[in-house]
Length: 145
Image (cartoon, rainbow, N blue to C red; front, side, top):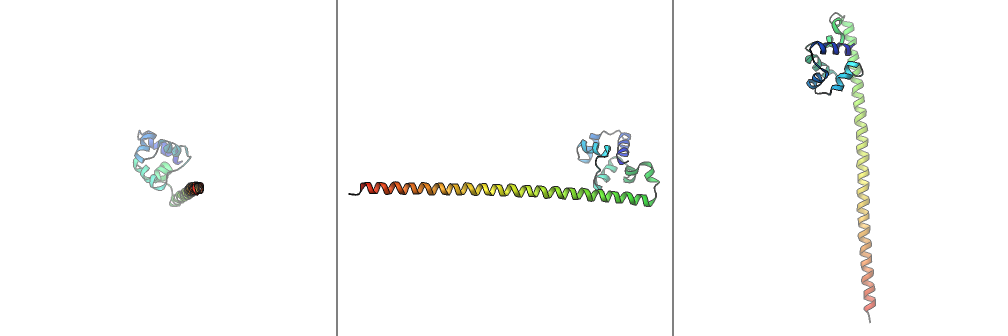
């Protein structure tokens, strides 16, 4: 119902999906997903969207019948919005955890790589120093009377 109301109100105002998206600082595909029912805006965007369309949130959510619905039905809608926002927040938390884990894994890989480079360089310098000592020792034994 929200998607249908959004589309109807947007067209009544003569706005394209792109124009609505620009005013809300989102991409056009986001508005398209809202209209097709694939996603819903969070509470802050919902209020901004209602302002852009010059209507109130209940009209946007319920259409004309939203103005006549009883208090109990409005509370049910509020509960649905709260649940949707909770689900969105949980999804965002999971996403941040995944990126944090990826970041830690990359940092550990880079640390390991730097450690290998440093150890390789130290080993190379040590090997070079040992060769120099061997050469000097050989030269000294050859020139001794």
